[in-house]
Image 1: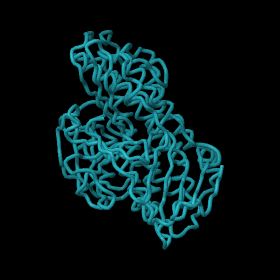
Image 2: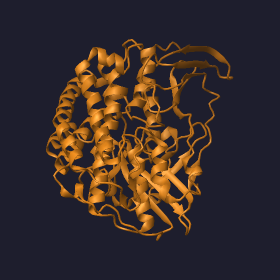
Image 3: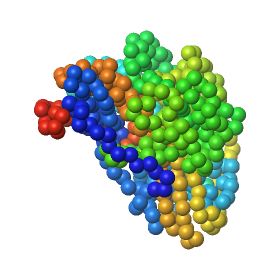
Image 4: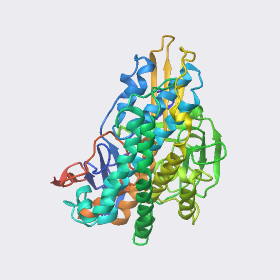
Length: 495
């Protein structure tokens, strides 16, 4: 792609040993972690590698742009709605039309359901076993079924909360996963009266579950101060969408960058001009791109400890850091408690931010249900191709999502670029892995709980690499100790 920076692998010959965690477990997709040890057994470097390749940007070329919402929803089975909406928004721009107000409100409603179900999966299914059972607990039980045995009420509430978000998606789009609903120009159907009643009936339980969980997490923090200090606690920029008045936003708005002190670096940036301020780098040891804030340049590894570089974070932590207010009463109280010490720089607090976002999504759904536009029949604006290039942007659960399309006069795609939230967190995830490893790993004997803590640093970001997970059973793990000349000194397999 034009403008992409290609980076060479660093010379690792001087590093005496390498520990490989492959695959990283309880994340959505497949990846591995390499930890490099020096001659004294200290951690000299760490890398997060994404080992799967999807290829959507290439195989979509030549397809009609009308098909893209349904195609790109298949990027992931966990967050298909995010791609569905970003793609439909790009299609709106290719048609150069304003979609009906009812269509925008319905799209917003589905995205709120999407954020709830995805965040609930992350908190209760993927990270909950660590947070509630402990990093040192038996790995054979450290999964969602172990959590259900130890904390049945809380686990049940988390499952029901995710079901609520999925129900919102299903009632609008006809199914929970990959709904073919949002299209260039609007949406295919409205919310029926029966659907409205079904959502309203489930709201009290969903709200009570998230309020109870928030209180539980706040109590947990008293015993997790070390993790909050070590799991990705470093200065960086944060980026996210905000509404015109600075309120938390998830569907539209402009982009804002703030620094680790909460100071606004850039504001009211047009998302369609993302190439002016976001650069894209790739490295040969991962299929995941490494976007960076272009005005400050690509941060080399030796400079990651300084703020004056282009590393930035996106997602729930970033959205709560960049907004002036969250916009709903209960969530606003939680936001103020979250911010009691200013800007939050620890990636461990992504978990806390997800809970607050679930609460505001529930409050926003509750407030939206009385809007008569949700039952409107005017749902789509129709036009032909009026632009040959367009960009659709929205907030996925994991952060800002960009769909950039170029087409010919017949509407066939000639170029596609997707900037995924997980990619934008790539540099921060590498920094987090290195920070955790340096604190916990000393020497070549690495106990399993320490490796789990390194993995947990990645889970804090809830990376979405595809639609598969490793959430149950004994965690598969491969650890290799490799000498300076590349020879395998020791190798262990588990699972």
